[in-house]
Image 1 (spheres, helix red, strand yellow):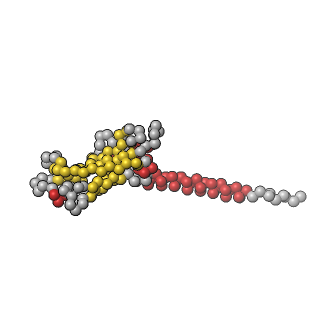
Image 2 (cartoon, rainbow, N blue to C red; image 1 turned 90 degrees about the vertical axis):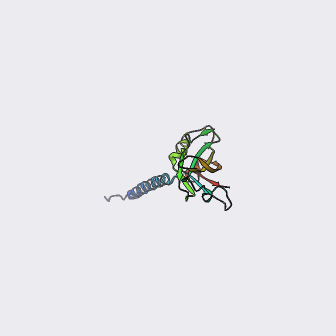
Image 3 (tube, rainbow, N blue to C red; image 1 turned 90 degrees about the horizontal axis):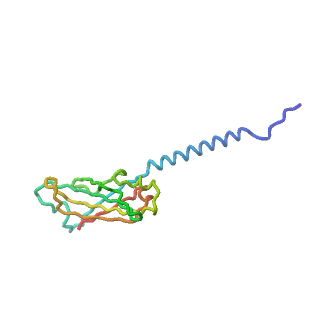
Length: 165
């Protein structure tokens, strides 16, 4: 008697199994890469119009001055202040921006839990010229940006601009 040839090709099952494994591996890599590229930070930039009274060129000659930047992140939809105490960065007079990392902004952990309302964030930044010896503020300006979502922060869009006058 002749051996009957199988109509079903078992090597095809093996190929589908391998393809499934590759697909799962690719999905895991993409998810991992997405979490690596998540930002969750806040960037503050400031600028001085040419005729602004409050700018480095107009600081008193006596004293050593620096720029102090204070950040506030507030969820308007749920009435929750995320940055308490307010994080503060200090920069040299030559700088025009600063970066608050994810742990300073506190948005990532907050967005991972459930809330009564979808979070809607307002970012407020206070930028001050202050004397390092007396701790006195010479002048300051603030900026507010509203309507940020968790997704905006995830994508690195948590920015606020401050314009001195």
